[in-house]
Image 1 (tube, rainbow, N blue to C red):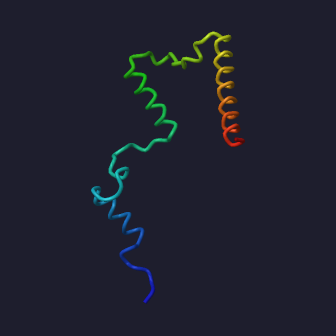
Image 2 (cartoon, rainbow, N blue to C red):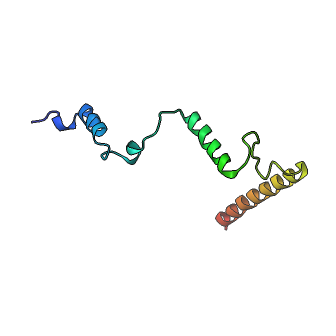
Image 3 (cartoon, one colour):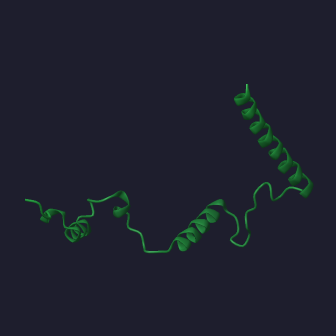
Length: 96
C-alpha cells in the first residue's frame, strides 16, 4: 500500500530533535542566543577588535587606503596593465 509513513512525520521528528540534543546537525547542537545577522557581525567585529588590542572608536583601514593618491593611481594602472596583458596572452594562445 502507498501512504504516509507514520515514522516520517515532520512534527514528530522536530519534537524528537528537541528532546534529544545529541541528534541532528552540528548547528542544531550549538547553544546560541537568537540574534540577527547584523547583530552577529557587530559582535564578531567587537570581539576581533578587542583581541587585536585596538580601540573601538578607530576604524581599521586597508593598506591601499593609506597610500598617497598618486601611488593609488600607479597601483590601479599596474593592475589594469597586468589584466590586459593576461587577456592578450590568452588570445594569442588561442590564435596560434
